[in-house]
Image (cartoon, rainbow, N blue to C red; front, side, top):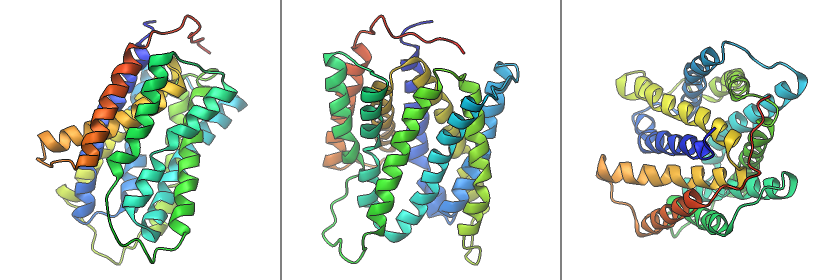
Length: 299
């Protein structure tokens, strides 16, 4: 197995998530609600799930540890998505997303202390630059921040923690469970929570079920799901302390580039700084030599 295969999977995640980020807001602006976006996303997880299970000859690990890890990963990810809707109702997105973007810090700390993961000097510098870049992609300067209360802040911290722990368990699970099984349980948990998303939806309002609503959401969320699948395998073959900041900084980097080239949206000065930091971080992480102890044992 090529030692840098994790990087290929991580790059696919950054590209697909970058495209998802660039186009995901369009159907919501056209009248397709956040909560139904979740439902569509959960359904699109079935597509790459079927493909990867077919490749693995429909074999699913169903021992207690695989099921437990799979459900933890799935519920932390999907549950965080649902909490995000509530957070966005309670507070401003320009404050919520910069906080959530720091979730790789949780993954890094857990992987450093519990999995004993280490990297070289270039990797460390790259990780630091990636963490610095993340909030810059979401930062928006707004003078009036009064009147929101503290609920949004509490929810943002919960989501940050949940997604950071999710990534840690994604790496941990890959030590004993194959990637297809992990993604299968992620898909199942996403589908289980669809009724919650439907309950949260205000169906009294007009909903865009047309091409620029439901169907645009569908193809955009397929990209999201493909990125999630590739992320599972990036964690399988790479270190969580490297994969997490690279994927999370690389995706908004790609979003900014796509938005500029295709949509003609000029990024702000803070986003330009974030782009520069993310590019340098990605290069440093990519050229950091792999240590000889980085091995993957197939379960």
